[in-house]
Image 1 (cartoon, rainbow, N blue to C red):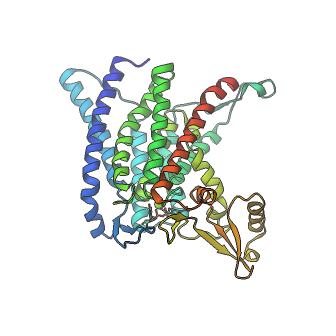
Image 2: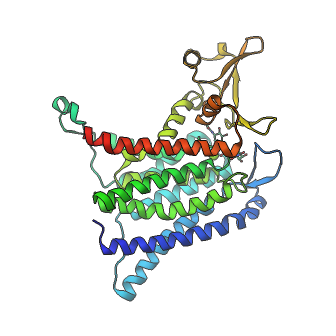
Length: 397
Ligand code: UD1
Ligand code: MG
């Protein structure tokens, strides 16, 4: 169970998170003009106005988060010197900060320089190394009860586990960025996932008393993280006055990876990414250019001011064998809207994102309603995650 020292430290983190919310809420809009002057802005593609919206304001949220971590160290040093009272510290605090700071820097570089995908993958793999090299857990995989008679109880996967963790960090950093393009969605989904992970950590810590230190480590990360993200969401919500940028998506992804890997709950963490996993799998044909992928796959506003699907158009004869197979499977199972155009010579298919799939099922909706629907789906994902993590896991493990 959590000790008195844990609770007092938690109260300090909570108070600092309040300051983090207040400062982000102040600095995000205040610095917007400066970003526009530095040519860091985008156009809101689904609005009639051509106004410049400052881009990459996630860097302010990320900086405030990092400063909050440093302030905690300052407060704990003062507490030690002045009152001889030690606040809680974790041995892998620094590894988390290294990985998150590196990713924040990489995201900002991407917003400024528009890096190529191969650079982003290589650099985000490098940024995951501080986490992977200080992973405090075991590399053994425990088999579910029904197969233990045949396979045994556990199996040490060794180096493969480290590769898996590195790939998890790369996935988390890109998963949020490709479920994007609607006002409030990047920051909104992050809040839902972070609040869900926090709820899981609190239950483990204070209800079951399981691996208290690991979960406290994650709680200490998520309180200031939720605070800065909430402030960002406030300004990014429809109609967006700022864009979060790739900076925020990468920063958020690496914070999740840091909590999951160093808090030793990476498999549970993945359960909270169910919509992102579905979006990734649906996107694979376009991400790997098996089917043409335009620069933007976000939905598009129609004449009625509602958002509808966006499309990719191509001649199926110009696709490779795999591309034609995918198109046939998609048509057979009605996984996307596909229609013939140009007298049947070309096909028009909705861009393969979860956002377009929702619009394919529901028809056009208002931008704000679309964000709310997608956040509701994220919440359903959380309910599924808890149903898998607790009742099913008790049955099988
Ligand atoms: C990713 C997606 C892309 C999507 C884009 C939207 C993939 C492979 N890439 O690209 O399909 O279109 O995110 O963020 O899936 N914007 C808006 N409204 C918003 C948010 C963004 O109009 O609510 C526009 C603005 O012009 C903004 C730009 O999107 O400047 C940011 O796009 P960027 O983050 O650079 O796109 P990618 O991450 O490369
Ligand atoms: Mg982006």
